[in-house]
Image (cartoon, rainbow, N blue to C red; front, side, top):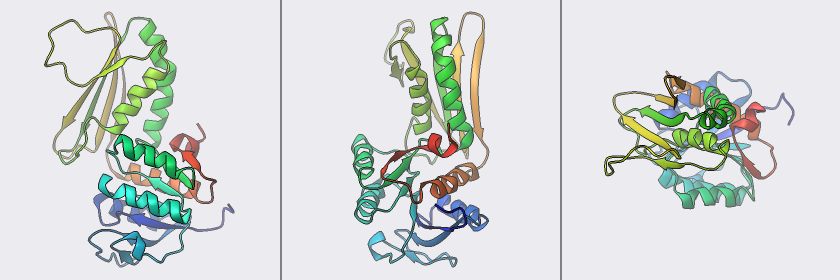
Length: 257
């Protein structure tokens, strides 16, 4: 795609908290423009027309950015597949069936899905793939603690699972994920990764990957101080994805990692 072409985007879930932040981020990015929004409440933003459903939206767009709810994702994917419209899917808490639906849609159009849209988290995933195998072989236990605001519906976070998956990929054999130890009374098995979720206040997103060894602890941490980091990532992903061939993409493709 020519670098001087402005990418035209539909913002799915435009009236939500993240939708508003993306609207602000994109308004200051001359590479991309939101030409229409879709939201169940249909409240106009003033900057672009807003429709209650994608079927009502007449906009001819290059890409769709989805920051809606899990309940709205299947209909969005069907629309994108039918119109060969590339989709940046930022909604979290998807079921296994919806994940399979993503892959099916990617056979017909470009789909980008990442557990976390921030640059820092995706760089962290790469670091974990390099470190986890060596530290585990040296006897370090792996624990992950994630913290989010009290309104977050899913637990553990998709990012926490992605971090655990990154660790597991570098191990000689996969470890089990453990989310609750309250029902057992036994010493911690070696081949497990504990994942704990904290919900409270207005925490945007904290993730700690703890490698606990004999007399030493190494912790990889990421702190998001504003949701703008996810909006910036979504905008970058949309610019990247517009014009791409059908297939599954993630933030590593955007960043060239």
